[in-house]
Amino acid sequence: MKKFLCLLALSAITLNTAAYADSAKAATGKHSHDAHEHKAKAETKAKTQAANHSQGQRLHDGKCTKCHQSDVYTRKDRTVKNLSALQGQVNNCMKGAAKAEWDQPQTTSVVNFLNDRYYKF
Image 1 (cartoon, one colour):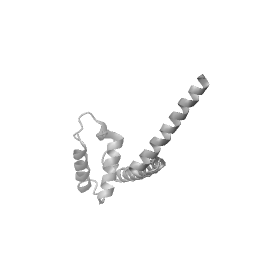
Image 2 (spheres, rainbow, N blue to C red; image 1 turned 135 degrees about the vertical axis):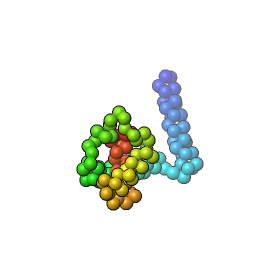
Image 3 (tube, one colour; image 1 turned 30 degrees about the vertical axis):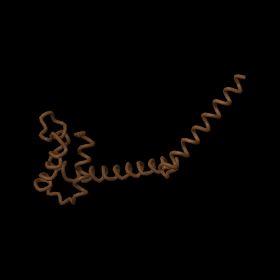
Image 4 (tube, one colour; image 1 turned 30 degrees about the horizontal axis):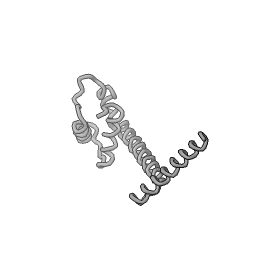
């Protein structure tokens, strides 16, 4: 009798799970494999971010470290207090001592590199 009740409960759970999946598919028009698509998109985004980070580091190392080392980013009395100020400082350095002729995506990659590595805004 206990085995019968357990089998009956398992059958009900299986039917409910299948019905839930069917109702979700009917409601959204999507299949359960859409999670795989989300994972693939997240992996693509991570690869793009890594490439941008690499570009930002390369540009930074080629220009910024000619004037200062990384301690300017980590000192206690640093003047950059938020992401907007970091963007402004990178722009000032580009026009000034660094004489960097970066386009907007390159500038953004440097800002993102500095933020990820040092500032964490």
